[in-house]
Length: 261
Image (cartoon, rainbow, N blue to C red; front, side, top):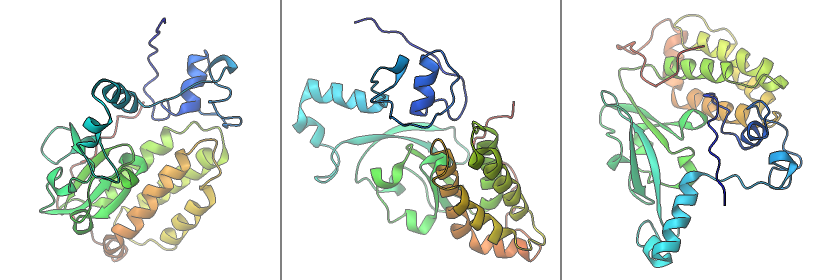
């Protein structure tokens, strides 16, 4: 069977299933409304299977070594393992294979950390104390990206940088992305700056509800998930900013955000 490898543009949404199908069909790598879904009408309008490479690798290994081999890792309820991209301050990102059920603190150093980002930029912030009680679980692993935030950094500033990137990376094809995400990102930049906030915190929470579930793809939903978790996890820092000061002592950007183009 012939195989053709296609290299996608380096954009955040290029890997979304409908964007991928559209690009392979000689279109732009932008999401489309998935009705009907790509499994029914995909590349050149033919039914198309879109799968994660990690899943296909697991299938190949199961076919080679058997189901019992696969179940030798993980838990009875969730056998197997997952690839995790781990970001730790002062070290380059690493890709590690972790069995389901492994405590997160074995992947990430949590001492001296204030929060952990689970699932990448469409994931959620959680306090480091809560992360210490969690294990590797597909329910919250998302894209498999884990990042630890030191206590001397500002989680609001880090989230603001990510939100600007996500707003710029949107397809700009529907209202939630074209208008909603830039407005949320701009408002969150105000929250990330020490000083008067007025109704900005309330506005961000309200706008998050307005864009959720209304996009051509799930980009707005993932962005809103990050926003809501930041408003909860960094609530004390929000109060400090509203009072005119920031508790962070290190302003060096931490999370890897690509340069704007």
